[in-house]
Image 1 (cartoon, helix red, strand yellow):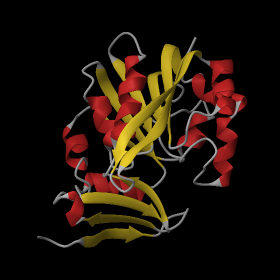
Image 2 (image 1 turned 90 degrees about the vertical axis):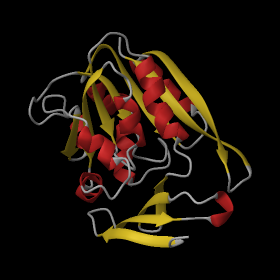
Image 3 (image 1 turned 60 degrees about the vertical axis):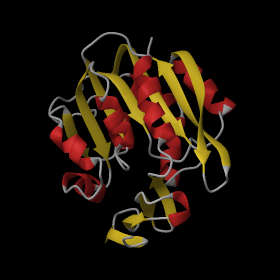
Image 4 (image 1 turned 90 degrees about the horizontal axis):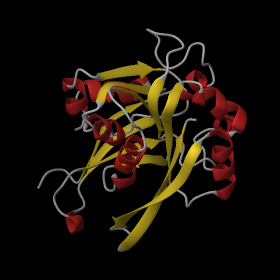
Length: 240
């Protein structure tokens, strides 16, 4: 048996200390569990990535046509991005992350799925603020092609539209800001959002003002720490 716990890297950032850890919990088997923490707050665990994967699967299932250009906001441990690449219609994937440290973990293979992302020529890492880019349609998500549109924007940064990593993110979850982001979607394009919380009627009302065919999908998964089922939510809206 290897180490039960290892801190792989820890770096300062503009929003706090960010760390990558690996642990083994013997009662749950011998597999390595990777975790990302911001200060004392857990951001991501490889223990249960089902909803992060579902973010891509549900979002892209709502998109018609091909080839697809996709933006993923928030790299995390790479599950949403890798799941997007599994759709053969995707010919371009831009991954936007505010923390260069997280991007470097993937580039250097410190995160297992980094090797998959690095080996796929469709992948491009963008270091920057998703939220700033989202509300700037003239600039947008692609520094090489300002103002372009995409087929899908998949977002997993805050814990939910109410549980935020930073208070300044609250302004994004409004009709005004989401409307600016939606201008970066082609007609029929999709915006999908991961949330740790149950479906939020208030946020759904905001989505319904901007998008067609809005859905809040409840994603169940087994939580070994609770010896039972937990759920996350994936919101999906289609651009008119």
